[in-house]
Length: 475
Image (tube, rainbow, N blue to C red; front, side, top):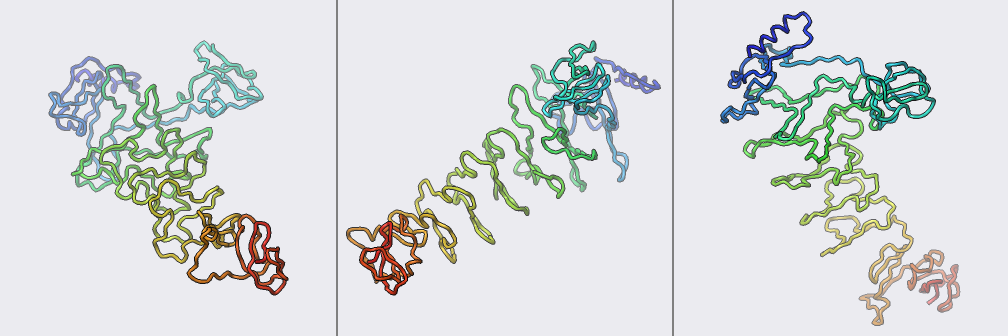
């Protein structure tokens, strides 16, 4: 440690230090592995400083499971309210590195750089010979590697370009962290933040805060040529990772829940289009315990909507099986509609062959009204081309005519009382056809009726009439 501090002293003594080389191979310093060491800034290449942090240290281990560090910062707040104190602060000003999209018929000078014109391209090209770009096309393309001798060039009009690299390499970062795991590596964390808040602290606290302020004067729309993200996570590799984000807790049942919300998106102007956007080619878009874990369940609902809005569920693209499938076993009710509705509990406005199709095996009634209702089934405002009701041996035609197989049996039909048929004029009769075949009605204005002959209206005779499939005939 003395050699390290000597190197720091020499660095601070130089008026404009350019490079500081710390001594390597020093023995491990364990002086700070016990209690909090106080305000310390220590450097020792080779992870030679041992520290035992509060949330990641096994003090029962022979070496206390301490962390070994090449750089260690330890501090304690010194000021009261009104001052923010930081153990480490990095302040970066970025004012270079922007590359514009390639433009046709444009004068470019040596040293200029552009991005590939197509949105899916993430390549930057640099001018090695000045000139004017081509009048059409997408600009320079290709992965020809640019080298210091300017070989591997691409001609575009009279401009000559070289491939400078992917666009991401032009990025400027405040802190860049890279870690590699090689064969033999065990558990790996590229970054770990542990926040331990003691009892009695009334303030609010967060483990990570990321503030992104877009003051560019433009909106970075989805699927546009530019994008901006507060948090950007990318997973990949030759193997499939478990998850991009996992939320969990170390709490036990005795300790209670770790948080009220697993993830919260709040604020009236936080999100413009979609609070949670899913655009993947996965088996399930939004799953609930699809890889079953024990003791996982929702006491009230898997999805609960208590917000104001036009709809709770809005489906616009066609589905190959069904919009909603309930394949649960043992659920008391598949669809429960409760509360007060101002119009209908269920409304169908789609163009579909069948409005409601009850398949499978229903032990009781396919349709049952067990509550209080003004009308059990209301068909009064519908338009029916063939039938209002079509059943086995029973039907109701589009005009309300009732047909039953009981009236066509050889045994005949037995009525407990007389059968009264309402009368109408001949003009008011429905068209005699397939839907009204074998119907019996009464008219009040037949003219000189002859048995089994087609009838005419405008008279004064009240007689029964029969539909033979083509005409209403007198009977």
